[in-house]
Length: 487
Image (cartoon, rainbow, N blue to C red; front, side, top):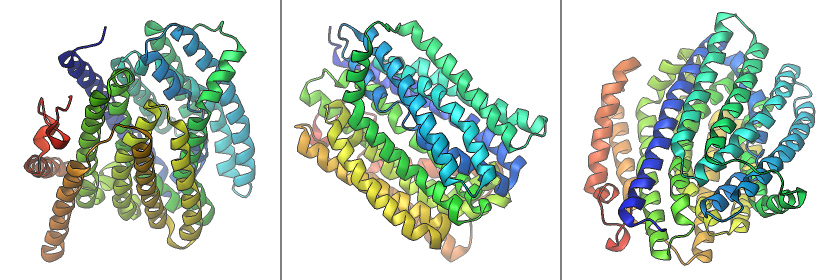
């Protein structure tokens, strides 16, 4: 039976909030792990870890080959045979992950041929691909069954495992290789935990046969290729940096990029929460769900460059120390990259929801070609700041392309009026902060003193959002053109 709107609102809000809470808690714990590891290794040795991890992250990003979203969508549709779909998905991910592991091993040898230490660490990280594949595909059960509370538990515990790996490295005075081996064990533990929890909500049926597995992989292929392209253009920058700049600079960029990844992880918490109620909703309700998602994500994402501009230096000092201050400018630019990614996620996921995976492929293919060309031209001359600018341009491009593809494909559309207002509000505040610093020389504090200052800036920004129409974000009604907007 279809949920009535109050029940729908409560369920979507609950799923979004618990997943967001899990992400925030996990992010804070990961910051603790980052602080422990970077202060122990220093920029140069941390740069070696970052370069090796970039190769692993490239292949981790494709180990499910789009099956997560396809299977979650099928489970959310509540059709018969969901157990066999889930089982076929697990088998498909196993096959893809094993293949990805072999390709990664070959790529490590070729790309890092002249960098033996990075190559050896990358080859160790090959062992993390299959566990990450199981971790990712088990999330399909959580998303499809609207159990983001369980997924939040996995987020928190996986970060605790990472803190444990960093702490054990320092306690035992291990080298970078020891730390990498411990992170592989942490990934394996997370995979076992996630698969076990998923079994509580959906038991996999593996009797569907290889034909069902092949059919699912073919169905997910456009998304899978898109994921390959997205992983390529987000991780290639780090790999190119490892080839053209010092390991110290790579370590600095890795700290900035890791901080921004916490923000990038936020949009899927909301888009995953609306999936179970989007797939079978009428067009007007789909429009309201997408409008609310876009408004909320842009309002939140617009704050990231504002806070980075004011607190980037203090945040780097707090987490990794003064040796990593070379990442300050890159962190500000990457915060803008995260803002564009917030908006792009809405349109890319919406294309998946309306079964237009080929449109996602087109947008990401164009973006990847542009990204690789720009990165090859910019990074050798401008280093980590150039890499950050290229990523920002790529995120803006894929956002525009995905938005245009969605408008051509679907009868559902959203208004951009409120998102533009939120961006302008953040931009005006950022300009005011920069002008105040330029004229008075006063900068934000460092250390824990930043917390009350950050709260004050958040209050000012929140007031600005409300002043330009942000009350619709928290009200029962309202939205583009005055139409009702679901929570």
